[in-house]
Image (cartoon, rainbow, N blue to C red):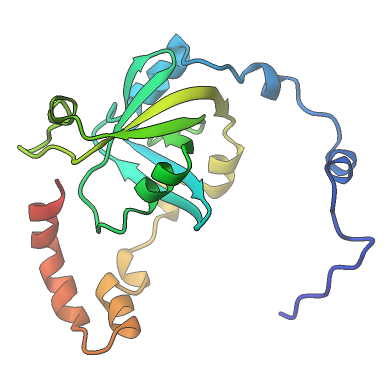
Length: 210
């Protein structure tokens, strides 16, 4: 499909244009936003095993998945969260951004629950040994902890997850319907054995998940 050029009359170029197009703000979407972690919002965070973490710096934007057993993001108090940085591929996109620009945003998801929870704030990195050890899993501690100072918290309604049917088993697909990780890597790199990568991955995952 060829995309038509955006004509001047079709271009949305100001906040005023957006507000005119969409109409008044739903008042519920405003008062649900608070600058601290309430007891209700805390319960949501402590039940969540998965979050999307967004960061920004001059080099660009990043949005990365983070997951662990429910409550893996620790609520210290009304204004503070701790996120362990588990073992990964050492690209360090999220951490590099935080070092350069502390702004951070998280979206928490809970399997089977339609609402999501959004947290906006600033972050710093700590390699304190005692703190890292408190997040030990399978005998291994994270190398650093993301310490998040909360500025804004609010929940998002169910519409996005309802439309996507994200938790509906009837729309799940078999992993074999998509190219494997090894297949994708082999297509992008010379002399890469994609089949060997895929065959070895289950055992490698067991050894390197923490």
